[in-house]
Image (spheres, rainbow, N blue to C red):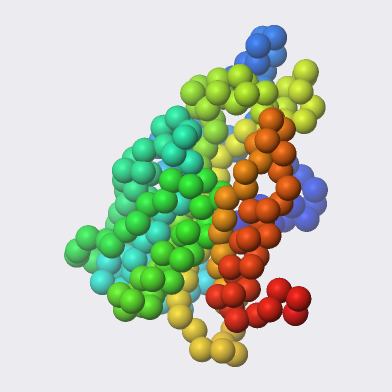
Length: 236
């Protein structure tokens, strides 16, 4: 995380030609860091590094390795994506936790919920975390997000849908990979840290190819729900 913040401030990236090729036979540029690992082992490495970064700023960093104190909410790729099996991503996260907590992992099984919602699943993930903190009495929730487009199935699907940034499509995006970890706890008003007072999520009918126009109705509904939960009028 610290290196990523420095790179963003310096306007640096690590875009490079990948081992994937477009329909014209040209290498596809990707956002990726050098690593000797590939596939699921590579993503597990990013999850473990994200957990390590998250623990650095905790008053009790070993508490994440105690299933009696910590529940897990995992956010993975959307279920329509290839290789989006929730069980697979749950096992990746659990293996990363076991490796990161080697010698410190407490006995017991984690209470865990996996959401195959992609980046749009964050709202659901936060609501699940609130349930664990409020209704079940867990001390904290470790929210882990993980995803990678660097596989043949995703690349082929995105090329077919004309979603990637290649020579004949300047409106696409660069595929990449990432993992992040966020620790959530109940906190009284006035305590330090980022406070989440309201969460809302909704579906937008629009499609990326424009076949169904995007009118922002899903976003408007999500904002209304978040303001309602936070007891804050939207006009405020």
